[in-house]
Amino acid sequence: MKSQVLPTPKHSRVRKFLRHPLWAPLNQREAWDRLTTAVNPLWSLIEVRARVLSVVDEAPGVKSIWLKPNARFKGFRAGQHVLLELEINGARHARCFSFSNAPRADGLIRLTVKQKDNGPVSAAGHALKPGQVVRLSQAQGQFAPRDSNAKLLLLCAGSGVTPMMSVLQKLANENLKQDVVLVHCGHSDSNIIFADELRLLAVQWPELTLHLHTTKHFGRLSNQKIAELVPDWNQRETLLCGPDGFMQTVEAMYAQADRSDYLQSESFGRRAAPVNPDAAEHVIARENTEQVFTVQAGQSLLDGAEAAGLQPKFGCRRGICRTCQCKKLSGTVTNMLTGQVSGPGEELIQLCISTPQSALEIELAL
Image (cartoon, rainbow, N blue to C red; front, side, top):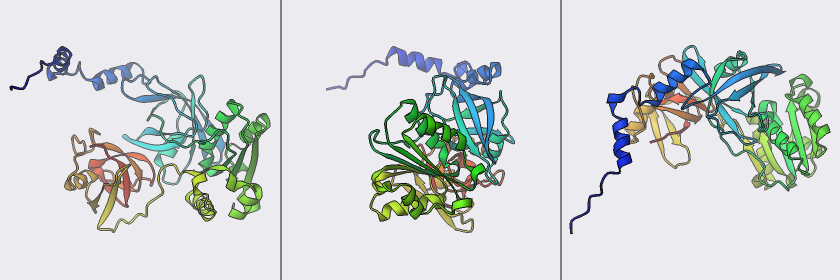
């Protein structure tokens, strides 16, 4: 019996005809996108972009950026984060920042950025002016309370308060009768981000118990101090965010009490892997898979992936087209064109011009 050859659907023939190179660039979204951008920088057919409305001082070295995204943005949930992409010296750089406000009817978003040493994105973010346009990713992450009826404890230090603000505003806006305690740690009174905003929120929403802890006056926020401030801490669902040392202390506290299941942590990406530029090779892990491969010292991630039998997308192999761009979740790389060393957290990198300086975890689409 001969197999039956099905006719090609008419819409497939039309689509193939319209995609023919003969019609380029009229059939290329990127070309139309460049045209719309020339008319209005906020417009895009393929990218999330946002206009800067204001930049507000929150604490020494900390600014909040209020943004109005374009229609490509799909919104966010309290506790999520986003990649903020800025052009710095002709190159695109991106870092992850949590939303520091709850979703609003007017669609405005607030990103709160702490200036970091050798942090080009945080420095460029602080330098933004009203009217400028930036690029964003879609919202990401699952950092939020699991049970709206359970007692809740929020533990944060420094800029770790940013996702907590988003969560607290959402709970207060919904006027939930949920027992919520926030312990927020900073070096001094002037360094506690959102201190006045949190005090006002505690007045407006009596379900919130607020503890602002300054290490200058009361010392490091130890396990004993947490238990003193919140005697029933081990009976509460807990959200944790802050510097690695602070988070490791709290995680050990919960593990020792066999309460790790009660704890969710947000570390603005994965924990920093030790940087070792003298290593002969580094291990590269793919997110949500058990697959790992190694990349030799000085070798590009693209070459290393291909040597391991993987087939990531690529184009020019020279750092121009960005076809091989992917998200680094943790670890440190060096840009082989500029020599610039990345941060240890989440950011966009190009496989063809990035070589590892530590173990990495990346999102690698094949």
